[in-house]
Amino acid sequence: MDCLPGFFIRKSRACKKERVKLVENNDNKIANTMSSIEVENQNRKKERLRLTVLSISGMMIFLALWQISVGFGWIPKKFLAPPTEVLKSFAIKFYDTRPDGSTLLVHFISSFYIALVGFTSAVVIGTPLGLLMGYYKVFDKLVKPVFELIRPIPPIAWIPLSVLWLGIGTTAKSYIIFLAAFVPCVINSYTGVRLTNPVLINVAKTCGASKWKIFIRVCVPSALPLVFTGIRIALGNAWSTLVAAELLASTAGLGYMIQQGRSLVRPDIIIVGMLTIGLTGALMAFAVGSLENKVVPWRVRK
Amino acid sequence: MIEKKTAKDIIFSILPVVSIAFLFALWVYVSGKNPDFFPTPAMTIERLNDLIKFPVSRISVFGHIWASLQRVLIAFGIAIITGISLGLAMGWNKYVHAFLGPIFEILRPIPPIAWIPLVILWFGVGEFPKILLVFIGSFIPIVLNTFTGVKMVEPIYLNVGKVMKASTLLKLMHIVLPASVPAIFAGLKAALSSGWMVVVAAEMIASRSGVGFLITRGSESYDIALILCGMIIIGIVGAVLSVILTYVERWLCPWRAEQK
Image (cartoon, rainbow over all chains, first blue to last red; front, side, top):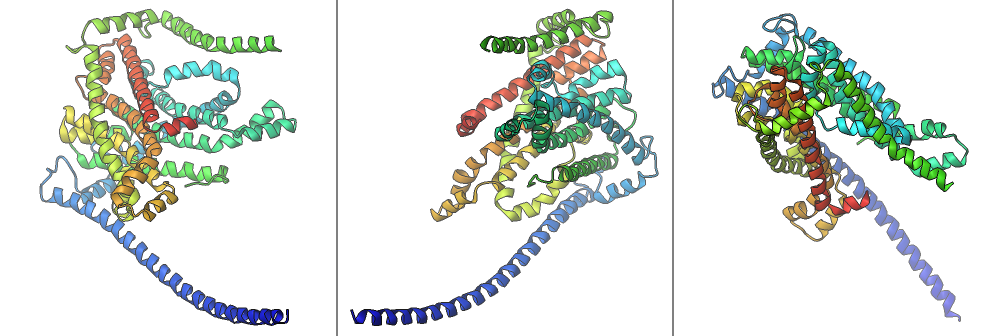
């Protein structure tokens, strides 16, 4: 009995010593980790630099290969214009109407206007329709069969018919773009409403919300991220369909410009047109993306 | 209560029929006013019948369908192999991604249809340019989706592989690839529908065969019934292709179908 407290005391002393040791060790460790974090940071910086250099060199090699292959005549000039010449044509195209009748800006505005008309009307009509179809069974049953009939036909296949019916003006092209943008708007809004968490709907029901209120306050906000996915897909579709429509039947626009570039064997004009089309598409996608971040801030984007 | 429910069910089962009937009636009504401009359903069916019996520009309608399908399938096959490998490489190795990423990002937003004039300028109007165009159209979504799929593989799976000392090849084949199959299939679906669209566009612009040619032929000879037939055929073939792909997906990754 006597030795027990003593034993305890000894042990607690030993513990204290050990603890002190541990603390010292820990301090050492912290010091070590601090330096290791720094090392890590340095490594990361080096890594980032390496990746950037690699990206730039990849781009450079691509451009250099392109330039050299045309410059040395491996690829004939009538097939491919070197990057320098593309840049030059791009600058010239801002004020020169040759060889296709309008400046780049005129072509661009003509395309952009048609795309905007078709795309906007598709979003304005398609999104509410999809939302309603997702929530109200009557709409679903009424519209879906017709929708499913029209959906598998690519909008491009509509071009000859709409040109015959509506001519080659703005109306026909806006109609085709409307078709191209309409389908993804409807499908994604529909799916968005359908994927609403039933718990949320049940909570609203328990609180005595009317059906319309549940739709507006619960289903629509929860569908918004998918609605935006649909709008982004619609934008891509609209833009690429517009190019097809302009290739086939048009007297202006970027698609017309590259088509003329082909028939006049001017690869520089074709490539300027392609890059403008690509750049505009990317910018529009970016604009929709930033709008999405404003409207749906709760969405975690990749 | 039960009776009321069945009454509602009956209404809901009738509604689709009503809407289809309405569409059909609209077609009959509009086309009846000016059948030259918009053929009636009867004329369209008759034309479809003729189309099956008599060849268009010495190729039967099935020949045209096969011509388009062949182009899509060859290009799609090549795009699957190259696209998945490139997507895997870019997702797995950040150096590959850093090297090829910027070039890819510049080419990506250019719609495949915008390549048509350049590709025709380079290779003319034969088979190869069309296959190349379909390849461009389906390659990009496959690479993008494979890349995203690889990036989203659960790190814990990879750590298990590391603990088991799996080689890189083993990790790629047994962990990364199976885990990203759903994402890859999403890409394949987008690629197939984009490929089908591109082949129609390419055939409409420059071709002597294929379903896109049927439509152009119809509009050149003012045979609007033929245009409608072409559109119907394109729609059916496109729908069948996507259904087949859905079944392949269900067969390849059954765990995903169960979730739905």
